[in-house]
Amino acid sequence: MRTSTLTALLAAVFLIAGSSAGQSLGDVARQQKQKQQAKTTAPHKVITNDDIPDHPEDSTDASADSASDKKSADPSPSPSGKTADQWKSQIQAQKAKVASLQDQVNKLNASVHYVTADAYYNGVQYNQAQLHKQQAAERLQKQLDEQKKALSDMQEACRRAGFGSSIYEP
Image (cartoon, rainbow, N blue to C red; front, side, top):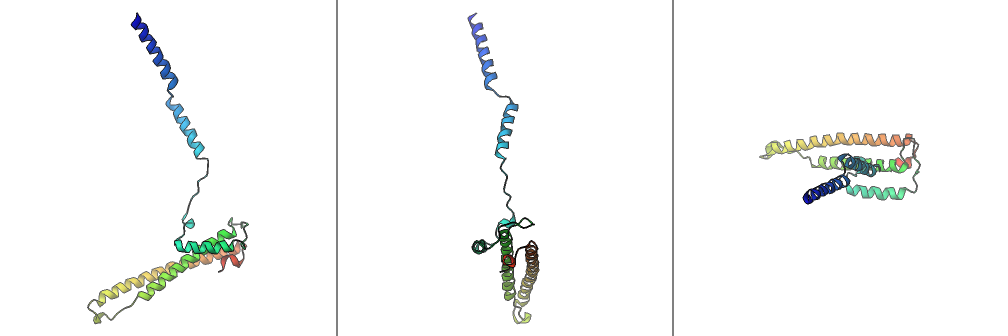
């Protein structure tokens, strides 16, 4: 009799402990969902290629220029939603791209030198390499022309947004 009551008592204790201490899987899932919703209420900042400078040394120059010009720029947003500082920084970044491409094109064009093919034992191969360099310079020139057009379009959009030439000119 003693063992049966002891067994019954132990079984009752385990049932009570198991039902009170354990949570159902649904309760745990609801709690996790509430925690995640609490964490994700803050909006995320999306970083695009426009936010990242192409050349770190150019970004420090542009930031120094924009810091001195911030006082003279109009902080109110235009109808397009951009402020003068935003226009100026975008235009400065585009100008830096154009200058970088122009420098690359100039260096590549300066390095192209053809030789008389029969004057050297590898003159033909050398001239083929020079031809490849010249073709690369032509491709870069096309990219440069596209970037210059994009800069011009940006400056025109800034002008149409009502900002003065101090924002989009050097």
